[in-house]
Image (cartoon, rainbow, N blue to C red; front, side, top):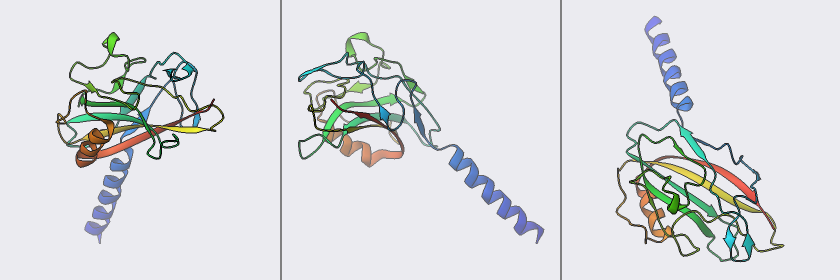
Length: 183
C-alpha cells in the first residue's frame, strides 16, 4: 500500500511540474483580449500608427526545445485567408524575450540568428494592426512556438504560410496572447 501511495503522489507531482512549466508568453505592452495601442498600429495602407512591435517575454520552454518562432496573425482580415503581420523564426533556445520594437529590422534588436520573413504587407518585420475602418474588432494572435530544431530551412523571403508549415512540423509547445484592435 505504501509503495502505491508513493507512486500516486510522485505521478501527481510530475503532472503538477509539467503544468507549471508550460510555455507562457507575456507582454508588458499588450494584454490578452485587451485593446492594442496606436503605437502598435501599422503605418501605411491607410493607417497612421507608429508600427512599434510590443515587448514579449516567455518562460517554460519544454525539454527538447532547440529554437523558438513567433507569428502574429489576424484571422478577421477580409481576405478569405486572414493576414500575417509578423513572422520570426530561428530565435535561439536560450532567448526569453524580444524587446519593444524588435520588429524593426533597421534597429537590429532581434537576436542575430533570428529571421524575420515576409508578411502579408510584402516585407519582413513587424506590421501592426490595420483593420479596415468600420470592420469591427480584429483579433491579433501573437503565438510563440517552441521548436525541436535549431533552424528552419527558410529565409527572409519565405511567405508566412510556408514558414507556418515548417513551424507546425516542428512545434513542441505554443502560447498565445490575443490583442484586439479596430478603427
